[in-house]
Length: 248
Image (cartoon, rainbow, N blue to C red; front, side, top):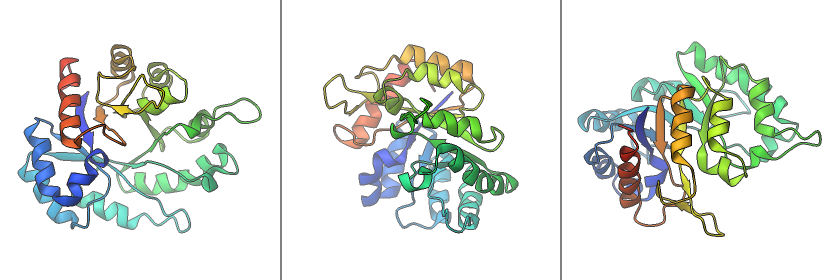
């Protein structure tokens, strides 16, 4: 499993100087980033920076136009940046108000357009997807059981699974073969359950990383929604921890 970073974690320094932030990432020895917007820069310019710094961006967090289903701009950006997978990082309640099975049926045609263009599609969870319906079923499970596995994959966020009171390792194992990306995000032991650097929280990383290995996860992506200190230094600390666990 290759180690990378979700650039949303570094959004503040990226907004100030995107190239300098990418240079810091490269200097840490990372070779993989997951984008979350380009901060106003043209894709060709960002691609040049990535190439110059020895970085690749196999995946991106993107927004989906559910009204039109138009994915042409996403496909165009992916062709320039070299994305393999486009990931929906969040969805508003109005989109799944009629049930997660209905939402899965709505997302499939969009995912099919991406597949026809040579791209993969994945969904990234938070905690609200783990709410149970009247029949006791977990929303995210309904979504993945309904959606075609050939079209819709998972990016499991370990922090949010733990936050919802479930076991991240068990959840990764449940969707073995369908979890190419996992967000490596730790959670503090305090009552606020805040984001912390990898290894400084309560998650069982030995079990999680073993589950990733068995599930065929290809990328372990460091992410913190709200880094507890300087974002670059927080990422550096996480990189050092996950390297100590054998990730490259």
